[in-house]
Image 1 (cartoon, rainbow, N blue to C red):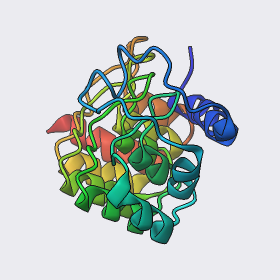
Image 2: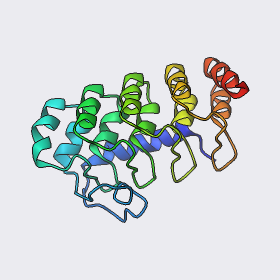
Image 3: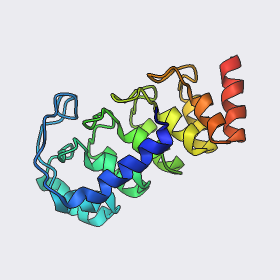
Image 4: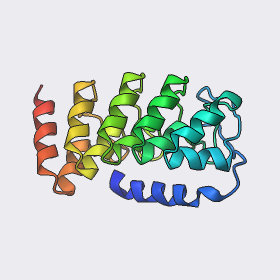
Amino acid sequence: MRSPASVKFALAAALIALGCSTTPSDTSESATASGASGSVLTDRLATAALEGNSKAVEAMLPTVDVNAIDEGGRTMLMLASYDGHSPTVRLLCENKANPNLRDVSRRTALMYAASGPNAHTVEILLAHGAEVNATDGEEGYTALMFAAAEGHADIVRMLLERGADPGLMDIDGESALKFAQDNGHNNVVSLLTEALKR
C-alpha cells in the first residue's frame, strides 16, 4: 500500500528522467484515449513546459499541438502544473490545453498541481474546467488525496469549495482524511473532518 505522498516521489523521478525518448508507448488508458491527438511532445517543448519557460512555450505554440504527449502520456499542461508554473499553465489553458487529459497512470494536471504547494495553479486549472473528483488508474487517488497527504491546507480548502468529495476512497478503502492523519497534518484533518459532517 502506498500513500499519495510516496507516489509523488515516483512521479518526480519520472519527470527527472524526461530527457529519454519521447515516442509514445501504449496509451490505451492515456491522454490519447481521452481526446488528445496523439502528437508527440518533443524534448524541447516538454523541458520548456516543465521549467515554466512561458516565452519558449508561447513561441512554439503556433506550430505544435498543445495537447501533444510524451512517452508517459504527459502533456505540457501536466508538466507545467507539477512545479506550479502558473503563468505557463494559464498560457496553455488559454490556448485550449485540455486539463482533463490523463497520463498512462490516468493522472490529470490537477493531480500534478495538487501534489505540490501550487494553489494558484490549482485555481487556474479549476477555472478552466479541471474535473475535481477524477481518480487515477493505479491507486484510485484524487487531487484531494494528494493535497491532503502533503498537508496543503489551502489547496484542500479550495478543492472542497469546488466540490471535491472528501468521502471518496482509494483502492485500499482509505480517504483523504486518513492520509492527512497518517502524515500528521492536523489543520487538514480539521478541514476534512468538518467537510465530512456536511
